[in-house]
Image 1 (cartoon, rainbow, N blue to C red):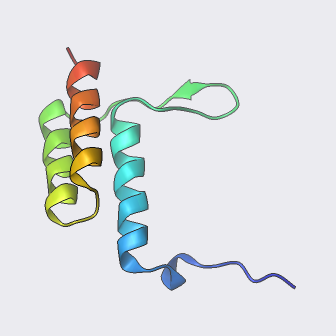
Image 2 (spheres, rainbow, N blue to C red):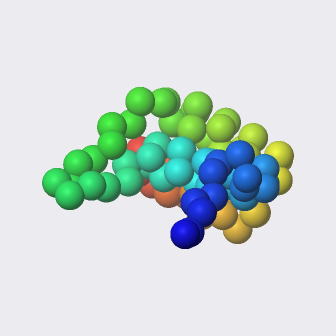
Length: 78
C-alpha cells in the first residue's frame, strides 16, 4: 500500500517555496481549473511585491525566481 506524504512530512523549505510560488502565481492571475477560471487579484500590487520580497529575503525563492515574478507582477498591472 502506498503511503501519501503529508504536508507535515515535507521539509519546511520545500513547503515554503511551494507556498510562495503558489501565492505569487495566484497574485498575478494564474488561470486554473477545468473552466479556466481566473483567480481574482485581491492584493494590491504593492502588497504582492512586499510578499514576494519577503519570500526572497527568507530564502524561499531564488533571485532568478524573484526577478521573474516581480517583472510578471509589474507587467500584469501596467
